[in-house]
Length: 197
Image (tube, rainbow, N blue to C red):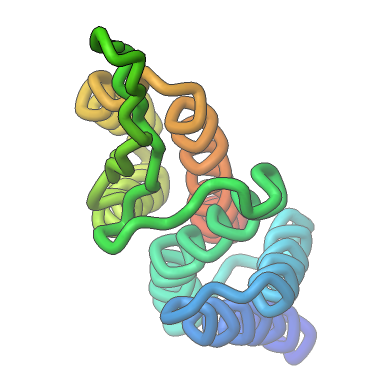
């Protein structure tokens, strides 16, 4: 293997490694700047992998695959959170179980014209775990060469959340969060796909 080829593939691995470390830093408590920088490093790796170059050596292929999968799964949550915060400008409150808090008003009015104060209800619970599994399934399927699994994962998620999508806040959050999460997972898996092409 020539030196230029080794430097090229090692640079891609290094970019993925830095992106993964930054994504891990934001996993506990999402922060916008580190996840944007992580996305920048991932984009750099993606752009480099798109260049026509000599075949990927096996040890570096394993590193690219492992880092791409970890980055897809771990980084997608903070990325989706950052996009959602930008889209909703903090107007939607987070629940304690990974969902969102929505104020529900009782539309019934009794004879005294008393209107009950709005009750707060958490919807779309379990979003963290669902997101991790969704990104794992998407990235692994794409990396294994089964892009049809993408449609299955999105359909299962949509059917599973169907009853919770009555309020506009939950619909918007579902669409924005899912798209951000899937774009991140696809980009991370894309490094591997371009590297072996």
